[in-house]
Amino acid sequence: ALKVTGGEVCFDAVKFAYHPDRPILKGISLTVAAGQRVALVGPSGSGKSTIGRLLFRFYDVTGGAIRIDGQDLRDVTQQSLHDAIGVVPQDTVLFNDTIRYNIAYGRAGATEAEIVAAARAAKIHDFVMSLPEGYETAVGERGLKLSGGEKQRVGIARTLLKNPPILLLDEATSALDTQTERDIQDSLNAMGEGRTVITIAHRLSTIADADRIVVLEKGKIVEEGTHEAL
Ligand code: ATP
Ligand code: MG
Image 1 (tube, helix red, strand yellow):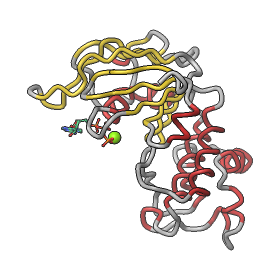
Image 2 (image 1 turned 45 degrees about the horizontal axis):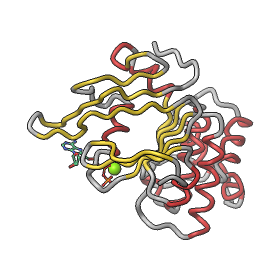
Image 3 (image 1 turned 180 degrees about the vertical axis):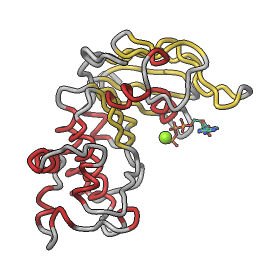
C-alpha cells in the first residue's frame, strides 16, 4: 500500500502512448513538492488530462516512472492510491439521490458534523440550507436540478470529506459567471490548504495563484516558472 508521508509527486521521464504508433507524452520530468500548487497549462490535445489519468493510474506509463513520496505507482495498490488522491473533474457526476448522499458518497461512516463542515468549506452549505428540504433534497438524474457550479461544489465537498493529501483538479473550460467562478475558486483555494495540488488550469486566477506554472506542448514541457517570471 502507498504510504504518503508528505505528498511529493514525481514524474520521472514519463512517456506514454494510447496507441504505440502515436506517442502522447514524450519524456515528462516534473517534481511537485509536498504542499506545492502547480498549474498545468497548454493547448488542447497537449496531454494535460493524460498526465492526470496516469497519476490516478487509469493507464500505466510506457516509459519512465511516476512516484509519490518515492514509491513507484506500479508497486502500490490501486485502493491506497485512490485514497491518497482526490480528483475534482471538469464535470462532476452526481448520483440520482440526495445532496447528503452525494457528499458522503464512499464515506458511509461520515457524521452529520463532518458532512456540514465539508459543505461549509466547499461554500455550498448556505445554498443547501436555503432549499426547503436541505440536505435531503434530491438532485435528480445526474444532478439535473442543480446548476453546474452547485454540482461542482457538491463534488468539492465530497472530496473534502475524503481529505486526501494530494489533489488533482481539472478545471472546466466552460465560462461561468463571475460570482460562481469566485465561489468555486474560494472553495478550491480552501481545499488546497496544506495539500499538494496539481491543477489543469484554464482560469487566469488559478494560474496567478499557483506556486509554479508548467507549460505543456505536444507532450513536452516547454516552459516552467512562476506567474511573474513567465
Ligand atoms: P484539452 O485541453 O482539450 O482537455 P488535453 O491537453 O487535456 O486537452 P489529452 O486529453 O491529454 O489533452 O489528450 C492528448 C492527446 O491524446 C489528444 O491528441 C487526444 O486525442 C489523445 N487521446 C486522449 N484520450 C485518448 C484515448 N482514450 N485514446 C486515444 N487517444 C486519446
Ligand atoms: Mg483535458
